[in-house]
Image 1: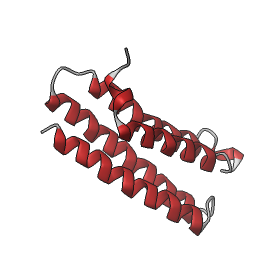
Image 2: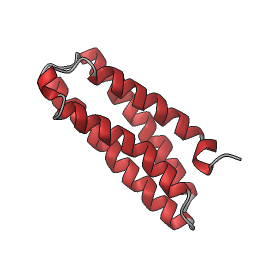
Image 3: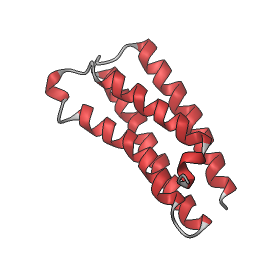
Length: 117
């Protein structure tokens, strides 16, 4: 028997996104280890963790609320990568990939949230 969040297709997409975030932030400068690197990784983890926690809640309304929290964390990751681009921690190509991935994930999570209303 698995948990409900493990059955959601978007969960697999979020885990792939977490992998991409982790790999991308590995090249950030060492002085960012406890700054931007930590912040963006925690925000990425939060997307998945809120999906998991929300899926265990007793109502669709509560699940929808946790998806919304996950969406806010996704926006935080997106903003962190804009900062990383501005500080030249990532290339334009990396920014484009992360931006596209963020937007795709945004749409999928919004669709899931709408299905819970």
